[in-house]
Amino acid sequence: MNRLLLYASLALATSLHAPAEPGIVINEDSSHFFMTRSADDMTIEGLHAFVDQYAGTEVSHLFLNPNAMKASFKSATREAIWELGDQEPPDEAAQRWLDNARLLHERGLDPYAVWIERSREKGISPWISMRMNDIHDVPNPKSYLHSRFWLDHPEFWRVPNDASGGWIVRALDYAHPEVRDHNLAFVKELLERYDPDGLELDWMRFGWHFKDGEEAAGAEILTQFMRDVRQLTKEWGEKRGHEIKLAARVPAHPDAARGLGMDGVRWAKEGLIDMLVPCPFWTSSDFDIPVELWREQLGDATKNIVLAPGLEYNSRGWHGGGAMANDLAATYGFAASMWRRGADQIYLFNYMDSGTIPVSQSDYRILVEKGLGPDVVFNAPRRHLQCFRDTVPSGFPNGVVLPAEGPEATFTIHIGPKPKAGKVQFVIGLAEREGVADAQYTATVNGAPRVSSTDLDNPGQFPGAARAIAFDCPLTAVNDGANLFTITQPPGQQILWAEARVEP
Image: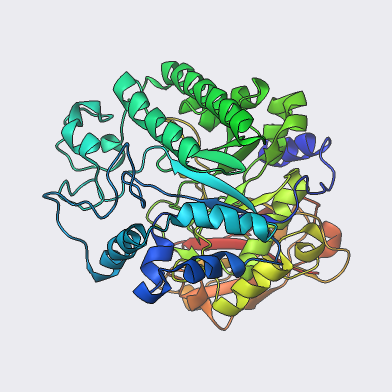
């Protein structure tokens, strides 16, 4: 069965889906606040102001991440970020993180406790999001980011005592009980120290937790770990007098997640989680998260969880391809497609309030104030980008179709609901090649006759493109959901960007 028919068959059970949870989820990482504020903001007023910017907006959930390898507070189970030992100090920007986090501690202010309390006062649901295997800067063992546990136990890396300097090979291997104990101790500390509405285990920072070929056995290990954490959230929920929910971030495709040991479907069916966030890692956003396939595999378990596909900061067509920060139209496109495919909520990662936001400051206010509900995104201009899956097991298809060479290229892109009126375009960006300016391209949509084309004036908006062409697609030929775009390409040319644009 080809991809278009597969989409259509799975979509039969998925009509336009109403949000199961109001608003959007924003994940605040462990460094951003500290690196983007001055020492003068390290006060109760400064901490409140961070939350207050979201009060009365469509941001319904703040997922507060307090850790990478180290913690951004004075932890009892791992080092605080400002505790360096013999490690190299960071650059000036990162030094602000260390200084501001330490300053809050010295002033007796725990930012996460303050933010949790303030969020509740403002009607926002506060969660703690724990990174389960962060490996930022592991090629440099002297980096200020690294914990003593990681430094002292290279035998616990996925490739023990690795000398290559690779990133994912130096992730911790959860097959070792010591690794699990180390991280479970931090889970216990977070639940004892804080009173959140929920705890998220972020298995996508980073998404590799076992040696190659040992992921099947690893799935049993992580499922037991999830059971242990679920028991802890139940116990602390009883002590706190309210339910403490549990969420998990896992790879975008259910079979890829299972193949890497993160069996989100099983966790949901066992009642171990309340929210599931299928998402990419970071290399690229994934505009093709198969929510309908997740729902099919989850079966009746979908009634008991919130399925919240996640969008990342940037988009690429392939590993090593040029990156584009997702603008507001791309964010709307992602949300529109996810609603059409059966999402319950939309989750944004690396959409923090400055520095790391992909959209402009003005568009950020539009984003948080108007939100990403179907009533907004279905009626706004939107972009649906051709990307790929950046976290899959060995041998699993990653969806890479770019860069495209040869006489014919095909792209299957999900556009959410077909507009009743307006315009749908398929847009390609072309590489700098001899003859590219005069090269003749034709396109069809879903097998319909060729469509008209126009050169765009600003090809530089697409990473690496020397020329860009927009094909106007007749609405009568456009499908709800997935659409097949076929391009005829002259010899010697290359397509390095592709997207569908919808203007209702």
